[in-house]
Image (cartoon, rainbow, N blue to C red; front, side):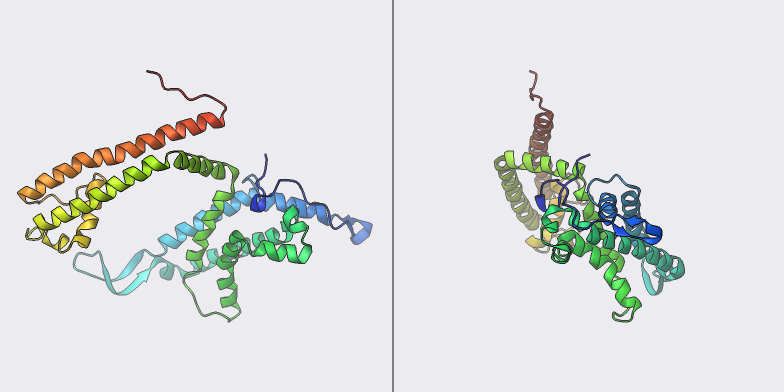
Length: 304
């Protein structure tokens, strides 16, 4: 399929700047062909085993990062929910397994990073800069910087130039942004931008009314509930009243022990909240249908 180009460039291949190089036994190594193959493996649409492996490894790294924070041993409170002292997390209890997986992941990500830098001359924009300047320019792009940040702390720590860090895997989560480079994801967000652009004024007006409702409701509930012994701690001030009111405007009611006047206000919020969210939901839904139909070359109609 058609591959997205870097920086909005067209999709033409860069001219071959290096020819075959003689190898052992008289055989020649076709470096341009190898570079083009490496480029196909690590760039463009997700269609190669390496790219699927990288994607799976990214997701596994995020999962292990989250699971590793689970506390398994320690001194807990009387309810057994909060660890107070001597807390042991899964990443501490099974340190060898986590470290081995970390090393494997960093090695794979490093190989991918090197291949991306080496094959970046397949982009005409960087090829015309020359082999050195072009690769440096590509290395300074956003996604390459994210890739470098995901592996550099580990290697710097290995050679003693950086103290022990616990945020390496957290940084690697930013690699999930690379999913956006796949053509189908970019197209989806293109549709979203089109819908938001077409319906911007109506969505802005709806947001303005929602903001007014939030301020008004928070203020009224502050005055009616600040002396309510059951809810006073949530309404000590108008800023503190914003959070529970936001939840109420989204249809959630974490608080129910309102005073009589508070019940009246909460009932009004429940009715108005439906309109506040129903209008933009309908607008976005209809906008997406129109955008999809236009992308297929079909006319959007609404039957009476």
